[in-house]
Amino acid sequence: SFIKEAGIEVNRPEATTATKQDQANILIAIAADGQIWIDRRRVDVRNIRANIERLHAENPQGSVVIQADKQSTNEKLVAVMDAARQAGVFNVSIAANEP
Image (cartoon, rainbow, N blue to C red; front, top):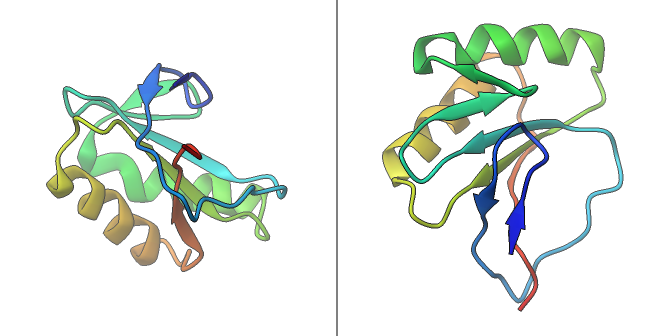
């Protein structure tokens, strides 16, 4: 199903072990064409860390949830995960739909 929470529609993959996240989170979307969206704005890959740092400062308890389109590349996913860790956020999850 298509989800539009981070600013774009993302066709998330399915996972039988998907669990619901209740806490307010930093939502990052990776589109099928590789575009990255944070807080309803398109973000250059070089600015991901700074955006995560800013949002994490506003909500230190929040985690990063990556909504990667199933057509996006692993390279972009790993870049976002690395940026989150460099920003000091180690609670990172990948959004999926239950089948």
